[in-house]
Length: 449
Ligand code: IFM
Image (cartoon, rainbow, N blue to C red; front, side, top):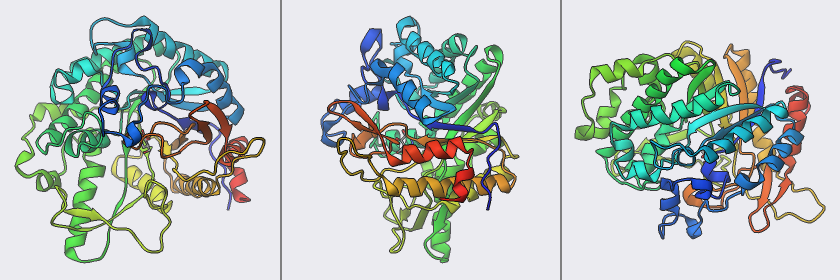
């Protein structure tokens, strides 16, 4: 078996602003919904917040050196909307924008290609106070913000993603309330989803006016497998698939929502204007795929609103977030994207795992065999998709650092680099060495390990 990846393949790591930067209100930044949510008692584990996180806002230059040391040739990060536009629209905070400008320069100086995500969940609080993703005007606000970012950075940034995981924004933020802004409302979830899509479209339209490179959307896909071949379980898997995997890609690529979403949302599913759907179907340049696991589901009439529950299998391996390690579904998903959406260029924009890491011992390497095994298996699965003709252009490990895992606080460590959150000491784990070797050999070393 050979594991040669294309010469132009991007080997990266991914992060997001609120999860690593810290200093969320520094230098004129406005508060965002995650600042408010994490400072609301009971919303995050141990009351953890992103106030300090990995202190990346103040350690950016050294962090880029760490990336260069790993041999990365790409880095995916997100821009904090409220750093750039403290009120979400209107007056631009040049100091906030300067931070990203310097980051891009530092990356390029180290031959690291930046991929920039415009929205990774940190809506400016000022906009949330005006309805946020529930207000149709959000598409214009997002368009304006995107234009500011494109104008400043597109001369050096060649890869842009509009949204990260819109499904998580609505499922966690508007349906179940586990993520900011913490709403629990069946009627709101489809509206938030639709406005996320309209905003994505608006940003792509603006990009076609002022940008010169490539723009796409990042979705999280989790193939849904029925727990049995009973018609009920099979129907449950179909509903879960429509809800999680088709809800965003179908409108973007085919200009329609899957019919099954009506079964899921019932009377809460609105009739959308045809013009909206026609405009959402706007060509993009790539799909960003975040892949972690598959979902095995069974019919469950008590589970709201999907009537489908996840099933835990007795002989499977699970990560610390309770996700089954199932690399075959990465290959399957990539092939499915190719077959359903016209073989678009794809980047695996996130893949990785949280596992318990033994505490660091001074002078000794921090070993993380489970993460290493996860990465090897998933890279082999990615390569199988290349063999099947998928136009796969890059792979980004989630994540560069252990960081703020949203409502789980700092309890879940996904990093290649361990962070001691009391001292900010960074210690590369065994998986960082492994990834470096994989990058150095452009994948070939996978044949031997
Ligand atoms: O940490 C998150 C990230 O923000 C979005 N994708 C999944 C990761 C792990 O849960």
